[in-house]
Amino acid sequence: MTSATRSTGFSFARIGAMVLRYWYLLSNSWPRAVELIYWPTVQMLTWGFVQLYVAQNSSFFANAAGLFVGGLLLWDVLLRSQQGFAFAFLEELWSRNLGNLLMSPLRPSEFIVSLMVISLVRLAIGMLPVTFLAIPLFGFNVWSLGLPLAVFFAGLVIAGWSIGLVIIGILLRQGMGAEALAWSLMFLLMPITCVYYPVSTLPSLLQPVAWSLPTTYVFEGLRALLIHHEIRFDLLAGAFALDALWFVAAVVVFYRLLASARRTGSLLQQGE
Image 1 (tube, rainbow, N blue to C red):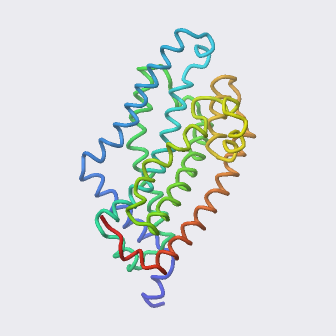
Image 2 (spheres, rainbow, N blue to C red; image 1 turned 180 degrees about the horizontal axis):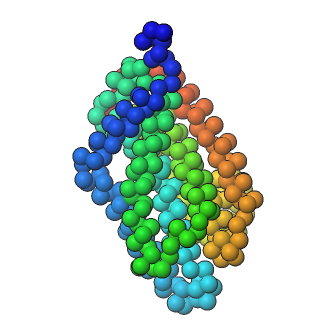
């Protein structure tokens, strides 16, 4: 088998090389690492103190300890998985390195997998310290949720990857003019996905939209666990079914946008 033939196959070595590239960027820039921890910490402190106040003045929330902090921590899992995915791609645009990658033997599927891996690394750096900080400050241990936590985590990460994949497809096609989507798109979904309140709070017209999002099922499942102390397997199944649908759709959209970018020549115009 020739080297040219081998280069066309799926290569974990190329994925590892890309992950190392992003790791070196992250580990050699302390502001990048601090930023990963800073925002989850600020949000956890803000909503944690809100929860303390409400718990001291409401018997309902006193019986649902951790509702706000738990919702916040899971929201940050979703947000950081999407942003970690998209921001790693933006590093290539900012450094004008995308053309070099696309001319290399690196396959789009390998590029996607490398972005998934580095998003998990960034997520771990940003979220692990915050989850342990919430224990002494607010008495909420997200790790005590056990197996449901792993299911919630997986459902949110897959959803974050799906959204991130669509965003980088748009960046490929539209260039840096669409850069703001990497920061703003998730916050547009935040009110609809019902992070801090049940779907029934929404107007009736928006409720079907909320139930079309896999993340809504995760947050409803969290509330069922914290308030009623029950695991809603129907909600978890709905989350993963929609996750699979969303991810397949995101892959299709990404490849179509990539093909369109190649046809129109927009790949040659990437950069700041």
